Image 1 (cartoon, chains in turn green, purple, orange, blue):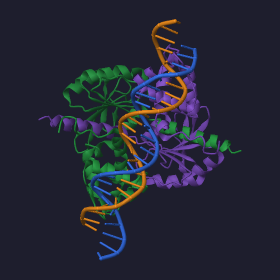
Image 2 (cartoon, chains in turn purple, green, cyan, red):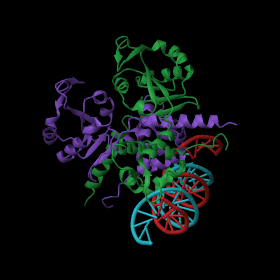
Image 3 (tube, helix red, strand yellow):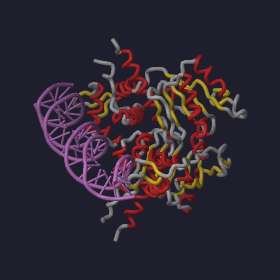
Image 4 (cartoon, each protein chain N blue to C red):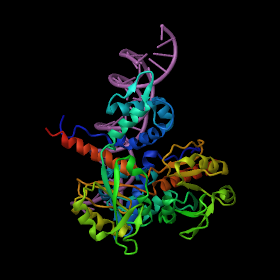
Length: 218
Length: 218
DNA sequence: TAGATTGTTAATCGATTAACAATC
DNA sequence: TAGATTGTTAATCGATTAACAATC
């Protein structure tokens, strides 16, 4: 096995958050097993595809029973690396930044939000969900003294590239980008663009299709 | 041409928000044309794929010049239905809901945020970005009297299905779902699940892969 | 004109599905 | 045991790429 041996295809990575969502929810049920067919009903993926996806990581199922819900959820957590502790910081304490400070999604995924930065003097010092907003001037110092894994970027578009450059120089290796501007980063930096308005776009396209098709009835 | 003649493949719909993002940004430049090769550099899609995607909608390019940036952006806007006016309401005025009340993404996509609802008496009456938070009891009445196209759902998971049922009964045809719980809706309802923590998941998976590969060097 | 770049076809590649032996 | 469901292979389907004639 060489260095690049473990390389999950992007297409499977894209489905992992969906599996995670439904398996997390199934924990609350009193069922012990779930079949690929039942997962297909929930996720919209075919049962065949689900079995194939899961078999990529190992053999988790039990013939004639399905998948042990608890075990599979744990496996998915391991596959996604949620069992490793990661530190995240938040740059930009505007409306979206503040909402992300209250995000309940970190802990269950192994993330800890350790700092929030902003340049606005009116925000600096304010405490959001028990975390004090720090002056952006201290960004490099904080990164140097704390092992930060991910920086979430919720600054205005105009400031985005400058802050990104500072983050990269300071040694950040992964950026969760909420700005809607193109960012340039070196090849070895993980950049995940969270298009916050993506759903708005897709709904508009689909409503438009329905409108066009409806008006086409002769 | 029959009723279902205009049906953009999902795989193309998924790339439209990306084209939109980069073309919006290119408006600010003083360039008149952009080639498929330049768009490939920006988006990460191949130039061949970009030409093929665009040719699905028509012939927008000019041989030896590329695509007129302004015209192409306008076309993308039309394809995505942003030239039609749509009304959106927000259910749940918690941290995320309030952040979405300040979202600058509506107008440019042809959306108008027309109401915010919550059940919390401490929030009802509060004005967020010039919109007063209404009592959730008035939800059905509002939908009946206003032509609402989309409902954005930012309520706690426990309330999500109940509110969804009320929205569907009231006649809403499209839901932009920010809750992380599975929702059941009739087949004719457009449901777009905006997985707010998707980026967090993908970064974790990828950092985990790097960790595993690094530790595999013998 | 020569160079550049589109739009489109055919070839390739990869992802999904169908099917079924294995087995609980 | 009979029925159910996995894991996996081979077949199919669809998406991407390579290539190039057309043409600005």
